[in-house]
Image (tube, rainbow, N blue to C red; front, side):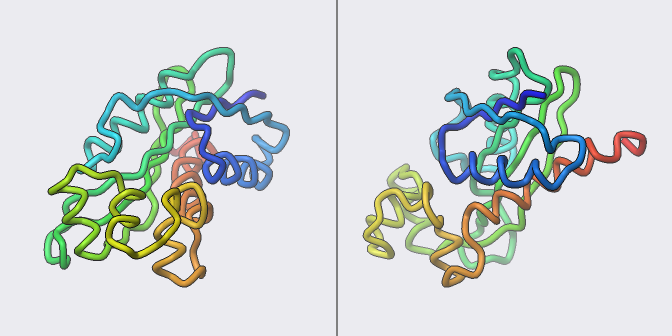
Length: 177
């Protein structure tokens, strides 16, 4: 079995490779990382755009495989939060006919970061770095902002795994969907 992943981000690759081992129907799968475009903004600013980016990634790389996976992080509007927005990770698994979607939990960035994303059109890594919260200009390829904000209790790889697990519910329980 071949699974194409629409990313070269090591965090996403590790998340998928580690997680498939926990699923009997996927445990022998070979995961191939394939660079592809999301065809949305570099920093999605709505749930709809984030979902579309994950769907585009999955669809674009469905070539010579059994499943393809698109993973996209982005902001979504959430009423009554300090900034009006929270980050969410979307995983879309495509089987050539149907999309199977899962979302991670959501969390809010510090207000300074969210302001920079919207006012200066920065990606999260750049906004966090410019805000002086981290010296790592590529935090999203490491522990992620979630790792920094939780003091390492939840790192980006594990956060991403949660979205993947939610999408796998539909594949593992096909008879219910």
